[in-house]
Figure 1 (cartoon, rainbow over the protein chains, first blue to last red):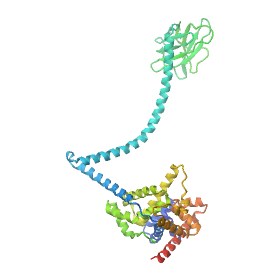
Figure 2 (figure 1 turned 120 degrees about the vertical axis):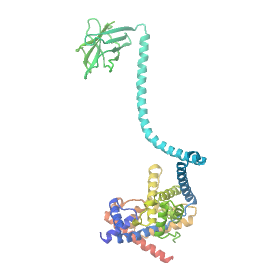
Figure 3 (figure 1 turned 135 degrees about the vertical axis):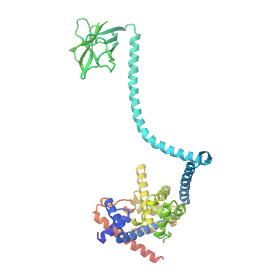
Figure 4 (figure 1 turned 90 degrees about the horizontal axis):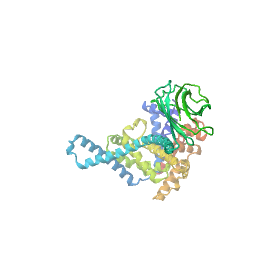
Length: 262
Length: 194
């Protein structure tokens, strides 16, 4: 490295303006004890200091007082912690305990803030979840209220659906109201294979079955479906459930699992 | 002019070594020797006096905690302090600019118009500021810009090169020429006022 380069690095270093790579290069020179680099730096640092000293201002005494108090507070609490840790517990003076308690409380406060920041993001997520749950609960409540209304209506009828050979132990119950529609609850049905679902049919006499909705069952084999009233046409007298492609089909194609008459 | 008597580097290095051992008295002496220097610099970067005093306290608290990290091979104790004061003040300024929606004058503007600050002792302060102002303005404009951007705005040399649209090599040369010129100006001033 030539002299000009050393002087340039020293000037940049004294100004605190070297880029990372240059700084590392110059510090390596200094660490290696390069006399030229050290002399140049000393020179430029003194110049910077003299320029800065031109605008020196007497600080208010409060700054030093605050620093000294901070230092005293730090060493006192350190000494007291040591004392508390080394002395028999019962002999610890009361004031120290209060200091410890205070320091502990402050530390706990700081920790709480830190934890709070972490926890608040967790809670944000939780609040989102709870909001979603609330929406679901409201929907469920509305469904229940509708169901109660149907149950209380004297015009509501109950249809039992029986399992067929495909699932002999399956059963179902349909609450049916000509104007409000109905609700089917089925149990004992095997879980639908992938890509398949159960489809409910409303049948009126010799008419073709009308699709009344698609549903699946949970692990216990229980599933339910709200059924809309059949628009126009004749009142259905039979309900049946078949296994169909998941999206449902316009006319039954698969095995029948449940059937029941009004 | 020099109202600040700066102790020789080996003395202040000795103080730092004692501070590293937790010597409260050494810290007090180091503070007395350099707090004025640091505060003046911080005030040139931050206009807000209350913020400047807070930064001053932070800088010296850092000195108290980190004195053991001072390495005499890498420069004088006062240079170590000056760089810390500058860095902290610029960090604070950037934080304030980010936080405040209100207009904060850019640092080069602050530097350029330094003497307009109100102070408890306006006469003396303004006079001193004017003097430092005059010293920097003794530099050719191109060198003064480089020195100011480096020192009062905390830019690195490649950032200065980008800001000024000049080659990096030119910026490096100007930094060196600027400091050399300041050095000779300060010496002359010292000769006039022994």
